[in-house]
Image (cartoon, rainbow, N blue to C red; front, side, top):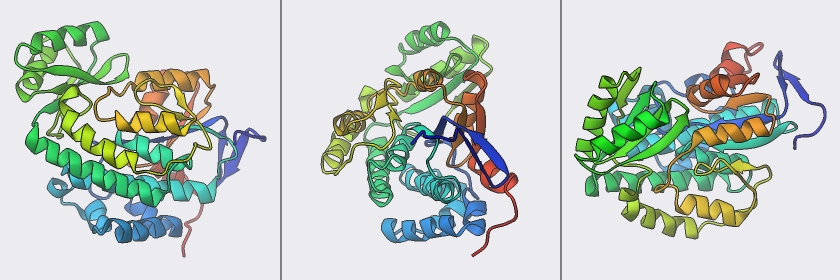
Length: 327
């Protein structure tokens, strides 16, 4: 991996290594996701078909048709997004391979997809892990309700001041540091609602309460994290074939012990995606490919990694692909 030549030129597109494969998390879902890949590429169709067998869920109906209200349920979102990631990965594997792929990473839920992409866990096992993760988190939403709010356009000091003031209404933490001026706060509902008011008053470009009815990536997820840890401890993990960047630190994970520790504490720890991008810069990543719905992570990389070329699955395999591939 990460060998010579430094350029991959297939499907009429040249991708320059080192390449990072990225996988999105919850929040990118929408009806229709993955349908174009499924209809165009046999490899993607096989992934969807196998996923339905493994998960015992109507994944294609949920991904392609929704309705959005059903797709937004935590126990549905997570496996469905994971399947789209798998389908995109399979198309990548057949089209480009791994000659210049030097690193992989995923945001929250997507971190599990990154482990599968690095060969640390079979994709089918990863699907079942994500299904159980979604079930545990959905149960947690009933036991420990809460919420999350995305704040864009304020710096870390301003967001911390908002968090402290809003904490007078309830417990609140920084759950995601996605970039220098893009954060997610998570905690008790009243505190989240107060943070929205304070952020808008402070001049945030955006302050959006997310459709996630729980305080993810905070200590309030202790019960869910304990349940998930029992599932993680039963996994048979392998050392990754390429480094996986950890959500909590942005550092490269290369051992089974590091992967286990990351998964065990995933629900409790902050996602520091800004550090992940710092690591990609240090690794001199030249191309970022986001394999999954949307291009949230590719767009962040385009803004914060100088000179990087960014693609998402739809662009790479549908919009700019050569003649259609059919069965």
